[in-house]
Image (cartoon, rainbow, N blue to C red):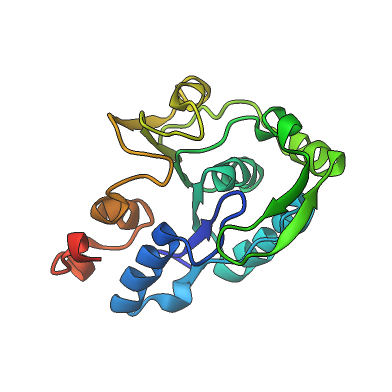
Length: 202
């Protein structure tokens, strides 16, 4: 389906996150809700990848939009299927960061609690792929003020891709709504559909 989008949220996040909600609102206004999927991902990557594979099958060849850990998932899936991906403050090698986080976790949006185990970390490691080399298929949006991830890791890993680095900001990516026209364009949605929308009001 041309112009379809699969949004992949991050660690302990959910479809209720701000970026996901802004994207849902825009696609609704455009009458394109059927072309968007924002799955509530299982905390275990093996389950989550299965959910995402199903969404890809439903949408055809969607643009993968991944935030944080979702950017890691999106990279794996984009390389597996030859899809385009737009990554927002993506996690690089997240399994290397989780050693200190083993134990009880709480989803920030759903209040669900769950146990982060060594099996979670092992499963994440299995998804790692060589650094992508295709600037036509990858856009990587980074903000230097990201308090959760060091943007320089992503800058290095995705150095062969189309990088957009903004000074300041935060891990949630400030000003995301204002960047949505670029996202829609990358997804293949014509500017004539959305040029009348005030994205800053989202």
